[in-house]
Amino acid sequence: DGLGLHVQTRRTGPARRGAQTGRRGAGVTWHSVDRWRFSGPVAPVGDAVRQVIACHDPELALIVLESALNLGLIGWAEAEHLTRRASRRKAAVLAHLSEQAQSGGETRVRLFLELHGVHVRAQVSIPGVGRVDLLVGDRLVIECDSRQHHTGGKHYARDRRRDLELITLGYKPVRLTYHQIFFEWEATQQYLLRLVRSGRRRVRLVAA
Image (cartoon, rainbow, N blue to C red; front, side, top):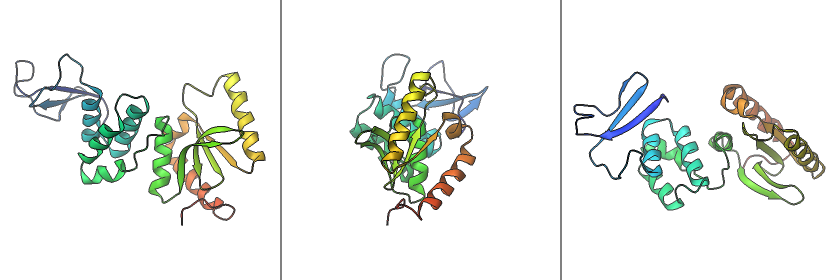
């Protein structure tokens, strides 16, 4: 399930004659197909997502699938169709598909919590605050800050005002950085589990 560069080619033809699907070399994985269903050098988004689902781990597949859905590059019907074509192991993860996810980090955190039986909702609107990334149970709010946003002075001040408003309304806000979600993920998972376990004594975090 390595990343690197994946290239889709015709199974026959001078460029890829004799190539094998899944063959790797020099950091490139080649995927030969019998039917070239599109014109031009770039595959449609649906075909690219299908390759991601086939070649990578189910978590990454869900992140890419939800990102394509959120950006309007594919529709809900096509997304569901792609999940049904996946292997049984991957389909179990892709069944967590949501059209509410606004970032890959949000998808990763939400999936982790759901796989651990935690009741979580994405993009919930809270009066006086606006939308929050994830609402865990009744009172725990998790914001998944992206690499591009929430770092400038204006965004930083706005986010802190939102946090204070959440606290006054009785919520517990927690912010996770892009680095924590994608480069310190093992430690972040343990933190999330401790957070949920400690919260059970105070508010309803886990679905009955």
